[in-house]
Length: 245
Image 1 (cartoon, rainbow, N blue to C red):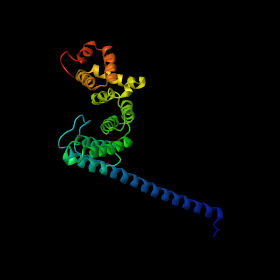
Image 2: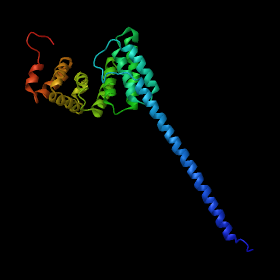
Image 3: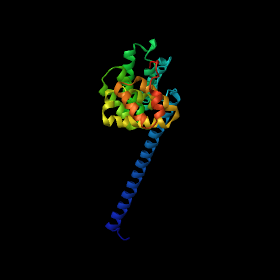
Image 4: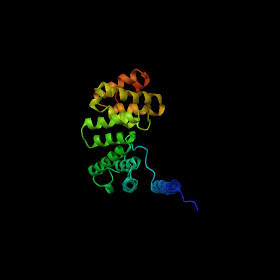
């Protein structure tokens, strides 16, 4: 009986090793696919649970709303579950801001401070969301933290959402009260809001409302910027004889 040559033995051993390596790679590939599918499934279930739990909140708060204190507490709980989502923290912050005058929410100063903490977290997690920066500017202004902090948050709102019509009334009203309105770079940003407001019939009153609360430099800015584009609205902004605004 002929002897088995060593080369044949080596070839057979090599084939066995290749088969073992292929089987090992297949096992690890399957494990990786199963782990990835499990992670995706867990994330989808997590987000679905959050959306089921989440309650409606205003897109952007414009005035305090009664009954917001309890909703703010619940929104904060939902945000803590979906802690990586900036939109959830914005909901909590906006509801806290809306509840600032309610006794159930605690002292207004403490409520605003809590709202500021939530909106800062929202801005950190979703810096592209102009709503968070504008709400931060509103809160900084109410807490009297300095015009520079208000202006910086407002700038970020302009950079991230220059054409959002829902933000124009609040943003314009704040901008024309700041000393920064005399800064040429800042004025360019605010002029964008003025032009957008003049193009939309439902925002013309926002320009008039902003003029009524504007500082003296802010009034001059609006008179000049609106007068160049819409003379009738510029005349409408001016107080009528015998009427105090």
